Length: 391
Ligand code: PMP
Image (cartoon, rainbow, N blue to C red; front, side):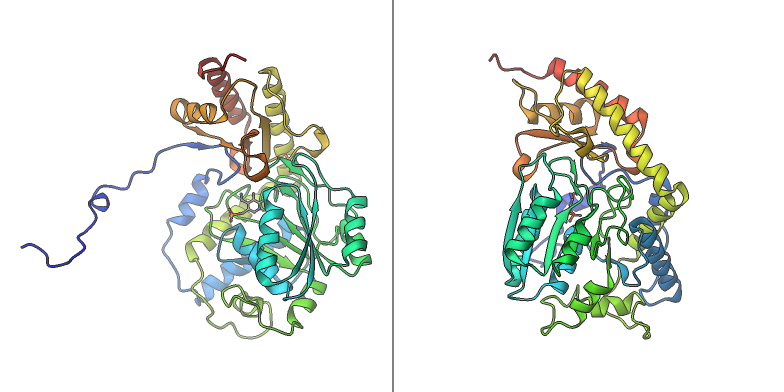
């Protein structure tokens, strides 16, 4: 019988789902380990089930460990890294607040865009991609603009820079300013100490070193950040990421938990396992593993005649490496060659580094000597076979 429906079932959906097998060595997402994949296949629970709350409590403790914080207000938001970025800014910043944003790659640009949407008075502190801010740079910005919040990215995945953070919290607090740090691309791969470094708001993502699927993002607020957030005059512009609701859903406000939104239960399972793997391994061994494997990658890249984009070895991010596009080659050719011939994903630059670099990620489960050797072999092959312009 022919159907009367004006829109028929799409023929593509009548074909089987096809997901190719790849090695994801870009700046994220990274490969999901078998243990985490298995957690993702478990039956779903109600978002209000006591077992779900127990898993959320485990996640909270895992984030406190990964962030090195005692903050009670520590949760995972239901969304990717951008959702955490919006949670931080939407809750802590009000219209008219003065905000200073450190821009040394795309993530500062994104934070500035979000703060502008709130109606904040946004000032930018900029550095060329490949470099990091000094305490002196930041002090100049703080004394000039007197912001109530300063944003900085720890692991700048667009340029491959790890931002030193010692002293930044103390400095910001001297100027009555909260410190907000993005650790989406660095958490678990490079040392960060939320409490010791005086970070007021720290967020990350699930799909990088934690090797969980994208869709949840850890975030934590200090007492000072909570005070500013919970004494604001206006409601945050988003109900979905309103921290008074989320604090209750995550059992942080001492009141009975009430329904706010349907938490992504499957992603809670996988995030819990990602955090459990990090807790079992230990932060220090994880930092060391990332350092060693990335160093091996750097040596191998230089042996191939390639140049690392970040000149200062101390500032090279142990999770994402940026490589200057070799003269005469098209970055796209190299990336396409690796995907087509080796099933390895690496990516080009992003924002200010677009066209200048390609990026190789070694995160968590993917940070192994074998993967370093595999990507180096693939790059050697690509440099031999990709067309080179005669210049
Ligand atoms: N910040 C940094 C440093 C990142 O690397 C990313 C993701 N590449 C984000 C924020 C945004 O995260 P998401 O793509 O999960 O929204």
